[in-house]
Amino acid sequence: MTEPPPAAAQALAEATAQAIWARDRAAQALGIKIVSVAPGRALATMRVRSDMVNGLHICHGGLIFSLADTAFAYACNAYNRNTVAAACHIDFLNPAKEGETLAAEAIERSLSGRTGVYDVTVSVGQRTIALFRGKSRRIAGEVIASLEEADHQAA
Amino acid sequence: MTEPPPAAAQALAEATAQAIWARDRAAQALGIKIVSVAPGRALATMRVRSDMVNGLHICHGGLIFSLADTAFAYACNAYNRNTVAAACHIDFLNPAKEGETLAAEAIERSLSGRTGVYDVTVSVGQRTIALFRGKSRRIAGEVIASLEEADHQAA
Amino acid sequence: MTEPPPAAAQALAEATAQAIWARDRAAQALGIKIVSVAPGRALATMRVRSDMVNGLHICHGGLIFSLADTAFAYACNAYNRNTVAAACHIDFLNPAKEGETLAAEAIERSLSGRTGVYDVTVSVGQRTIALFRGKSRRIAGEVIASLEEADHQAA
Amino acid sequence: MTEPPPAAAQALAEATAQAIWARDRAAQALGIKIVSVAPGRALATMRVRSDMVNGLHICHGGLIFSLADTAFAYACNAYNRNTVAAACHIDFLNPAKEGETLAAEAIERSLSGRTGVYDVTVSVGQRTIALFRGKSRRIAGEVIASLEEADHQAA
Image 1 (cartoon, each protein chain N blue to C red):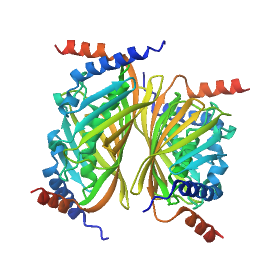
Image 2 (tube, rainbow over the protein chains, first blue to last red):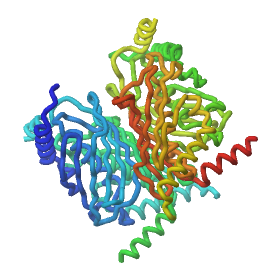
Image 3 (cartoon, each protein chain N blue to C red):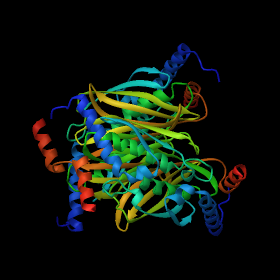
């Protein structure tokens, strides 16, 4: 396979992210913002709303995970090939409070054959909230085409 | 420490779960239901709503994780001692579709000193959706007292 | 595929284990014993030798992992289909001392398509030393045939 | 706590590594070499010997883990405070063959209170063999003093 030139790869990453985002109701409902994408990389943010905390006013771990998992998904799908999460691991290091904005930065550590490994760091400023590692698996099909087909079937 | 009699332990688990639930806005917002709790165990369910899916009408992995993490939290806090998630690992085995109801069953695998390990199986009927393993760490304080104090501070 | 009858599946598991064991120099060098195998299950033991400990006379975590990983390998290869470890997670709960004998019991939690999840509990009597979870991936070929071919190439 | 100056921290890391190494019979038996240490970092190598492979002449995953775990241990103990592995996760990406030399580089990702997270990359030249993430927990005591005391008790 010929490696696409960097500009084309970047354009493809952005087009794929837009196609995913338009249909990503879960990320939209959580108030997640995709700040930037690049081949194998993504940066996403989420504000800890009052309906995201537990009785101690600390962000639910599942929603911290959801933000990290979202950054991971945009990073590993940036080549416009359908890719799913096979397994994820998260270490919770510090709590995040209501009103704070979490940033999740995903970077590709390895991509070989159909399997990739991505590291996501979730932080509030200089404070690291969680370290996430996700393993991806490429499946059949292209992202943009699959989403358009799903729209067509749903219509 | 004298082991409490089973009836007292069960009553404490239920009282603790009620105290957590009353303030667990994140779980409430996700439509999670705590079906049952016992010392070191919990069963929770969640229906995959239309705002929980991605463009392929498949439940967002972060929300599957959130359900598993919730069952884990109720299981490891059932002794009324403040306990937090230190790390979690999840293997995604099969997708879950919009409209399906996920059940997450948490069981204690180990509890030694302040550290516990809990396994959560997420399923739809006979189909296993994900296997989750969480490591817990007990911190200072009791659950019910801490929550009441947080209410007081917020008032 | 027709499910083989239980007796045939058990015989295949045992034949596969023998074929692996004859060439498993790493497990032999560690003094590991395969106590029993069955489809998707294996039980292995290892005595903590003086060359397996660190300066505190506690078994090296890597060797506890090696025992667990070995039990996992025999369990997931018991169908005579080449299967490799894709990822593993281990929680260390209690130390093991020089002279103790560790037992590692592997059980299959899920097997769907080419991917399986196996849980291994490492213990010394009633004391749990570690909890291990391994994810397997089936690759091309059969175990017994592949090993015989590798022997042929090496000869 | 006053941060020690870099030169003192480096000297302490090296002295601690020497104290561990002198008693680390497991690492010695595996032929592991500690190439370098620094506060929160370590680089270790291991040649894949003929008694480290399985029937397919591929290095046993448990021994790849053992190398990574060793680099992790030297990195997280480099402050001369007794620190143990609480949990580890490893993704196996490519096989390593008999005769190859594996290099494991451990770096500290987070250290907060008594808990640390370390990433270890295992590679052969430009080929990544495995990605390992370890969570450490500091326990009571200092490394050098504890090892000397254990020597004394054993004498």
